[in-house]
Length: 83
Length: 83
Image: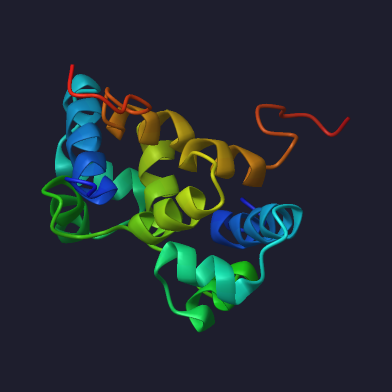
């Protein structure tokens, strides 16, 4: 029943934090030691990153991975109703 | 300089929680809708899981993914000295 997969929401969270940090995709990729294409695909949610790649991205954004994943979690987490 | 990659420590955290929950690897795999071989490899740290697979494992263990990753983080995180 889950709507959007985490990887997709994670990409949106990465992009938001990257822009807030004033980094280009290329610079983020460099800091995280990942390929720029990989970072671009993760941000667009078309690539489901591995845990280690996600951790490298989080570190480059100066945030912990748990925090970055929490950013990506749906706000209604825990609720069960329609309200 | 980072010693053990997160994926390796994550596997240890998964195994600990799975045993605490009284689940076999096969049952965890079934609950997470993953292949038992994949779960086994993740637990042994020989496979770096994707974010979506990690989220399915966390859900099957009735824990949030951020919490499961925190379990896997080294206790000295944030410290810089040798003490």
